[in-house]
Length: 132
Length: 68
Image (cartoon, rainbow over all chains, first blue to last red):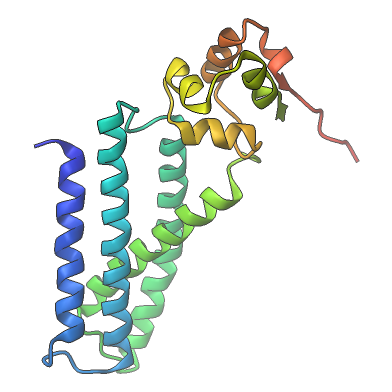
């Protein structure tokens, strides 16, 4: 299976899971659960957009990756890694103060990492990499 | 760093898509370059200059940073 087909499928699963969690009566309607469901839906939509645009590029014969996309990914990844480490520390502190996360501290940390990745890649695309 | 890509591309009457195809990048990269949002690698700068049949310094204008 081509690589660009995998991403939309995975994103659809994440999106479906997020929607299921949001609509399921099993999920307690605390604000933490709600934020996690919304983040999952946003991540699913972003992944779907990336996957569809990659498939579109492949269909048009454009290169899937070039030096700009590679640089944006590297920068967004490093920013999300750096910020999420601090968020993880914050989560551990919150858990010590009896704040319960629906998907556990690991899942919440991963959600934060992906969310920061999405935000930073959008900001980089808006601001550009001119001063690099 | 500024560049004259848009001006030279219009002079050559080619689209961003065509220029991207000739240098092997995505159209988005050409958009970023024309808006001065991205400084290309030496390889890409060389390839773009070759499309316009000019030297790199004629396409990309380097500005010395102001010293305090």
